[in-house]
Image 1 (cartoon, rainbow, N blue to C red):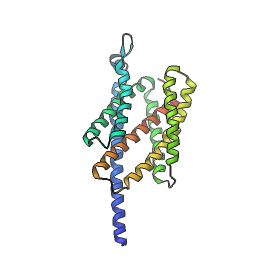
Image 2: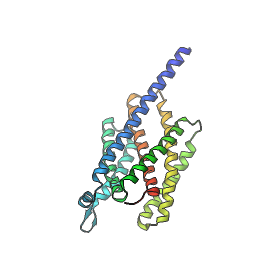
Image 3: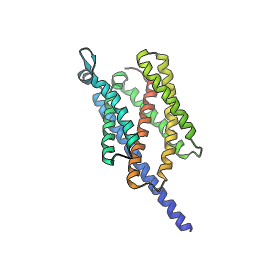
Image 4: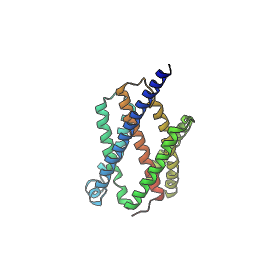
Length: 235
């Protein structure tokens, strides 16, 4: 009996490790794709060529800004109906478009600021990820509350695009740091539960690892942007 239990426990640990290895591979792969494209496209020449016209901002700029939101929603809502190949193609497209849309930060902030903020983000993200994985406390209620705050932040952010209120932008940034670090812990706990579920098929486990990697990537990027707005010195 004990031998069977040990074998089952070992099998669970093995598939959990494999699941998280894939999750982090997707997350870091997306960060690399986005980072390379952001640095390549983040020049005044690129912005003027593709994102501006004689009369103002090019429609291509808004496509680059908002198409990742649509693709991300498609991946997260329809991953069970899509093939793994289609999901992977959408994931790569999402990462590339995010890189293009993030390129504008290279026009606003200097490289030392971007680098230091990235490492601050990595440290905070890693700490909350470890907390979410190891804590015995159920974070479901906290996750629901944080998503409510996030919706309010999202709406306020859209409104502030037209208002340009610096104080509101500061408040949104501060809230963003708390929301995205908290959601990192929440989603790590959820991913831990998924990783230990042995009844999930191999294909569904691959899809869920991709969606998990996408979720962590989105949280990392949003935490990075929130911190950048708070501590970033403008170039």
